[in-house]
Amino acid sequence: MAIIRRNPDGTIASQEGFNTQQEPTQSHPALANRRGMKAMADAGRAIPPLMSEIAMKVNNAKDKPRKLKVLQDHDSIPLRQVLKGAFDPNIEWLLPKGDVPYTPNDAPIGTEHTILSQEAKRLYLFTKGGDNTISQNKRETTFVQMLEGLSAEEAEFLIAVVNKKVNNQYKGFTANLVKEAFNWNDNFMKN
Image (cartoon, rainbow, N blue to C red; front, side):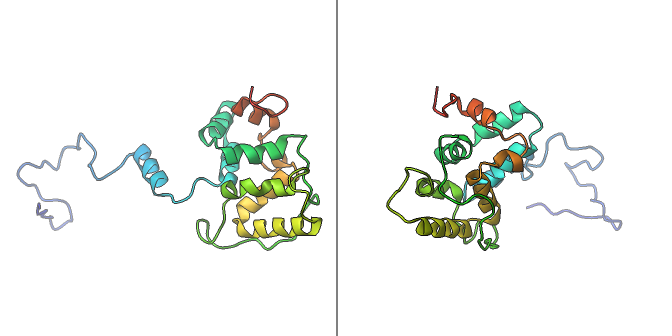
């Protein structure tokens, strides 16, 4: 342990082996650079990035190559399922168009929420040909329950997906961008 003595004005007193006049040539080992800070932040995160966060990153990216990189960096099966539902004209949602009457979940993100990447496997319940055994009333009730379980931002994103209005809400988030990012053909299938 080193004892650091200070001058009356608060500066560090000159000590043997330590020159206060020179700038250190290396950063302190306890300090992390920007890349290290990001790695620590990502490692400490308990949940994957929310799809609404990914959509905002696409929205905020300045040009097409950066938008493609965001999608490719966050590529996952649930993301592909949701984006296929958002852009594939062959997928028909069996839910009313427009605003959905639900109560947004106002709990802080990361607490008391389900996440869309886990709920994506249940989206078939709301599409034509997905599950014909449930009534329309049950389908709509289940959808509202799903929205109320998600964070407010992800619920908004899911409503944009169901209404096929992702491009209206997130600038530059188009079907062509998604097809190029995931190497899909015009039928939204892998080439």
